[in-house]
Amino acid sequence: MSTHSGDDARYTTYLPGGHHWSLRLRRGTTLTLTAREADTNVGLLCYNPENLLERLNLPDTLKAQHTFKLTRGHCLYSDMGRIFASIVADDLGWHDSVGGNLMPHHLLAKGWQSVSYQQAHNAWTRTGYDSFLVELAKYGLGRRDMAANLNLFSRVESDAQGRLRYVPGHCQPGASVTLRLEMDTLVILHTCPHPLDPSPDYPHRGVEIALGTAPAPTEDDICYRSRPENARGFANNRLYHLGL
Amino acid sequence: MIIESNQRPENAVSRTTVEAGDHYIGIVRAGQTLRLLDLEGNQAADTLFFNAHDTAERYSAMDTLREQGEVYLSAGSKLRSNEGRVLLTITADTCGRHDTLGGACASESNTVRYDLEKRHMHSCRDNWMQAIADHPEYGLTKRDITHNINFFMNVPVTEEGGLTFEDGISAPGKYVEMVAEMDVVVLISNCPQLNNPCNGYDPTPIELLIWD
Ligand SMILES: [Zn+2]
Image (cartoon, rainbow over all chains, first blue to last red; front, side, top):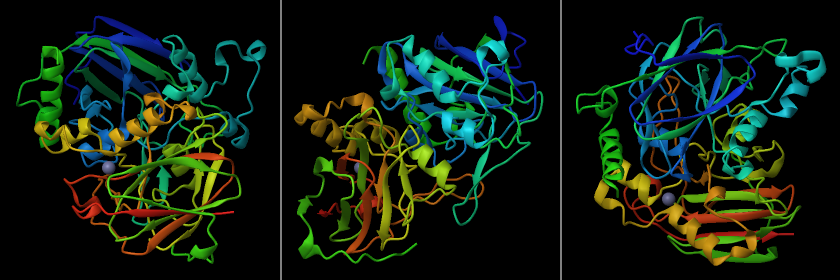
């Protein structure tokens, strides 16, 4: 199913569970994330490195594509009407747009008692919220800059009455998703658990990361064609790369 | 959930009409009640809240929806901050449902949703930019303009994960009322959108009422 399996990967690495990272990715790069374990979660934010005030805007992303979930064919929009990345391959069929971040109060409520670094070393129990703050600070960004994030690999669905439900077992080992960067993007990631994850203990579930390259999308590209809005999003990127 | 209020307009300490396409910024103190009244019906009020004493703490759609376990806002909803605290609680609602997923209109997103050449139409995000430019005393900048509430808007989520924009379920005289749990800055754009049915293609005024 994956069209970019990582075979052409220029760099591969592993981000352990409960950790965070940020990467500046060039336009035309692919980022393939592969889960090793069930119910992996990857929090994701995007910023424009040329203008850090331009950032992932999930409301604009959802309403432009009339969707609550994200999967293959969808694009991730900035608040400036441009596409940071498109989802060109996906084994999951649903990535969460509503769950937000694991917060310190969740650790207490879940009985995921935080453990000291002296005890835990690299198995320290961090929150997604603090993980983003750490990475954001490296670029001069802080609390005010933390936009609503995507939770890759996780599924939170709504029933007919609007009640939300986290779906355990949605992500299975080996499941992968590939983003193709449509403009230069600062990608901020964490592998902290989803705030609705019902695990009895803080789960440390990491993700394989493979960076590759992809040819520029054409007008028969699945993301370009999936909605007329996306053709206009790609048109905005084209204007941006012309210097507008 | 439909819950009517006992508050009487003649007892309000403040009444402000926000004209169609206009904006409002102000403070509601802890314990005060704020009502947004849809005067002519089918209007969308794009709203942001901030902790008045630390505006980096602000309304968070995701924290609000996740913690209440429901995707729509109505009476009983606790409007939570990005730090998990309750900013306001909705205590009365004659509309029944309000959206917080769809975000605000912007000239930039209008180019994607409608046409590249519609970038010059009026929008909520431009309204907010005007408000924060006119009122530097609140210390707000573009970084603070985030995922908002669309009072009176109806954006149903399907079980398959679709998002649809339905005609408003609001009508003349419908309102939503909330009690502030801390001092909050209220920033509202009374949506000027002319390209979709969120305000019936005919933006109209709303009224803000505050009781002690
Ligand atoms: Zn609007």
